[in-house]
Length: 590
Image: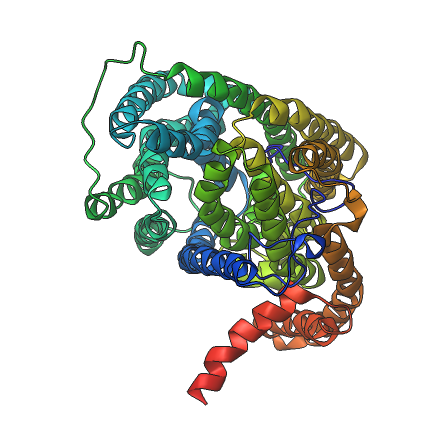
C-alpha cells in the first residue's frame, strides 16, 4: 500500500542507542558504563525509571487490549464484508470507495495531525501560563475548519477521485463512485477522531482512542449482516444496497468519533472555538505539517500506482476467466491482517511513550530520547518478530480462518495467503520505522523524515510496477506485497543511520551502531526466527487435513514454542520478560 511513515534505524534494527539496558527494565535505563554503583542516589535514579517504565507499560497494556479487541472485531467485520461481496469486482468497488476517504484525509491532514499534535500540545502546556488551553482551542478550531472544507470538496470531486485511482468504466465505475460519495463524509469524522484522541493522549489518557474503534466495527458488522440477511445471492448490487453499505460504513466512523466525548469530559477538557489565530504561534505547527503533507503525498503517489496496478490485475484476471481474487481487495485483505501485530504492540507502546519523549526533546535531553527509542525498539521487536514468523509460517490457514466465508473460496485464499507471506518479513521494518519516525517528530523535525521517506516510496512504486509486469497476473499482488517489504527494509536502514548520528552526537555516545542493545537483540531474534518459521510451516502443513483453525493454531504454537525454548540460550531478554509477565498471573491463580 502506501509507502508508510518515515522510519529510522542504523545498520540494523534501530538507532545505536548505547544507553539502553539489555534487561528491558524500562525506557529510561542507563548504560552499564555510565552507572555509579553503591550509592543511594544511584539506587533512586534506577527506581524512578522503573516506575516510569511501569506507567508506560500499563498505558501500553490498556491500549494493546483495546487494539486487540478492535482488531478481533475488525476481522469479524472483514469476514462479513468478504462473505457479502466476495473478492471480485464488487468487493474491489467497495474497497476503493471506502479507501478514498482515508487517502484524502491522510494526504491532506492525517499524517500531520498524528505527528505534530502531541509534541505541540506538550510544548504549549510547558511554555504557556494557562497550560496551553487557549493554544489547544485555536489549533482545534483551525484544523476543524480545514476538515469541513476538505470534506465538502472531496464529496463534490468523487468521480474524479475514483477515476484517478482506477480505470473503471460503465457500471463498475458508477458503483464505485456511489460507494465513494457515501463514504467520503468519513473524512470529517476521521479528522475529528484524530484531533480529540491526540488531546486525550497529550493528557495521558490513552485507552479511549484504542477502544472506540470497536464500536465502529460493530456498526459495520450489523449493516453487512442486515445486507446478508436480505440480499438475493448472485445479483449485482442495486443502488439501494450500495447506499446501505456505503452510508452504514460511514455511520461506524461517526459513532467512533463521538464516543470519545465522555473521556474528554472526564479529562475536564472543554473546547471553546477560537478564531484569533494571528500571532498565536500556529505558524510553527503549520510549517511542520507542510513537510508531513509532502511526505504523505509521496506515499500516496506510490499508493496510487499500487491501486492502479492491483485493480488492473484484478480486471485482467477476470477477463481471462481466472478463478480467485487477484486484485486490489486481495492485496488489501492481506495488508489488513499483516498490520495487526503492529497496531496492537507498536502503536500502543509508542503512543504511551510519545508525550514523555516529546517532553525530553523540549528539555534538550537527547540521551533521554535515545533511551526511549532503544526501549521501544527492543520491546516491540520481542513481539513483532515472532508475530511475523507466525504470519510467514501459517499464511494459508491464517487467511482461511479470517476470510474463507460466503463468496470467498479456496482460490481467493491462495492469492491472499501469497500476499500475506510476502508482506510478513516487512512487518519488522514497518514496526521499527514507526518507532524511529516518532523520535524525529518528538524532536520537532518533519523535514528529515520527508526526505528519507522518498527512498521507501520510490522503491515501493518501482518494484511494484516491475512485479506486476513480470509475474503472472494471478500472482501480481503477491509480487507487489514483496516489493513493499523490500522497500521498507531499504528505507529503514537508510533513515536509521541518520537518526543514529543525530542522537549519538546529542547524547555524546561513541558506541558503534552494530554494538547497540537494539541491534544485537534483533539479530538474536532473527536467529531464532529461522528454525521457528521452518517448524511452524511443517506443523501447519501436517495438520492441514484437520481444517484451517487447527492448522493455524498448530503452526503458531510451533513458532512460539521455538522462541520460548531459545529465549534463554540466545539471551532474548525482552521476550523472557514478556513470558514472565504472562506466567506471573497464572502462578498467582494457582
